[in-house]
Image (cartoon, rainbow, N blue to C red; front, side, top):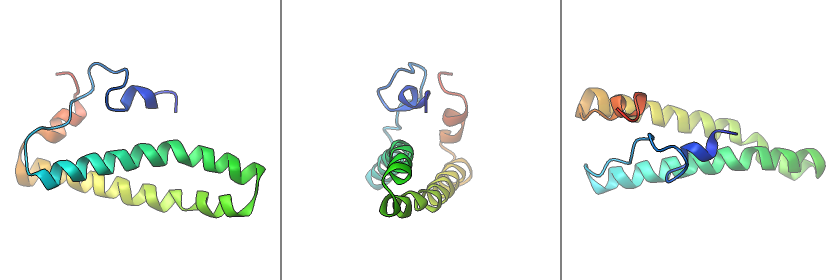
Amino acid sequence: MRKLPATIPGGFAPDAPRPADRGPVWMRIAARGSHGLFYLVLLATPIVGLLAFYVGDPWGDIHSLSKPVFIVLISVHALAALFHQYWLRDGTLKRMLSPGR
């Protein structure tokens, strides 16, 4: 959680890769949406967890949904990276693994 602000687009990491400005519009929208959802879930999960601990049941039910949401997001993210690497061959995976180079 401490490093999260450094990875948020426009955050504090000057060597973070910039979003790709090429490719179909739907792909850029999907990338922005999925990354935004990642950050939203990363920030909301501990907050909702605290609410579940101090307030009770309804928040606990909401908090328990974060695990399957993370599994789906991570799976889609990994599949998209492999799609870029082996189908499109556009260097996106290399940009993800070695930012700033």
